[in-house]
Image (cartoon, rainbow, N blue to C red; front, side):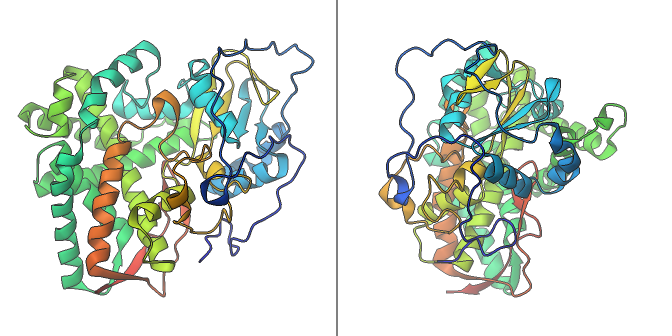
Length: 450
């Protein structure tokens, strides 16, 4: 099997440092990895006081991270992986009001996302950046308002199989175009176009090329502006206008409002209209666009890249899961601690930030055998590994996960039935940790008819 390196090496396993306190290994589970036991069934124990002598400060560089901030912004995957390997499963960065903890253990992630999720909200820089696009939505809300919207919208996403025919039709049209053209095709760009087409047809009931082209044209500056705001070392965006972002956001909102006014029948939007209206409907539709377009496109692009460079005969669903493991589109999740807390015996101060990184969890050698390698078959033997969070975890897990899996089950087999895929000799495929984890230079594949 081929290996997928994270830092320019051949991807062989590396030795992790030991200064940080680590949790014990869990019993053998997924493909030889480790499975996390379920959380406690009884009440959550009271949050300990930070003055308790038994609660320690987590290991980490603290303010020593400052010299690496610009590098952290340029190549976050490499830097976060290095910090995890040097300090362990919880790493403290910054100090005082700027304290951040990186969590690299599934039980720590579960603590934040599920067991104690009520103590961790979305009053964060990344959520603030998304609010500029969607307003208050499932991507940004907490508490009762979030819970009400989630309950109202969940039924719209519970029965997605009727949309399989539209997905297959769009995929077959794409493959027809590939085979007629031949040669090298950027599969990353093609997946972006395909998912935009599917969104236009399935979500909004429109096959108009103008609508599809508008989605493809407007989303990149919006995503770029959102990422810039969420990662800026100095928040200059508060004082300087981002004209491309502002114009794209205004145009996208106008398009969404126009489509909503058409009241399309037999679509996901029609289902959502049964639960919401007005600004709430517009905001949740924008959130759906932001969360459901780029993520699925990138996951599919990584899947075809891995199949082209490894075992093309792998089961399509297992291959998709393995692509989500190696290259999770949502590679990091940010939360704010509302009150003082403790994770793994370490103090988490109120109003500090915690980062849960699926990218780190998905390559943790204590929970995955041959963690850097593409091994789809590991998903044949066990369906659950607590270190696997491609769709998030806890109550806030992705509402569109079922639709994403329907796309994968439909698109991947449809392509592989008719096409042989090979990586172009000139390809430079590497991950770029943007607002999602995408291929930096695309995925140029040679497509041949089977």
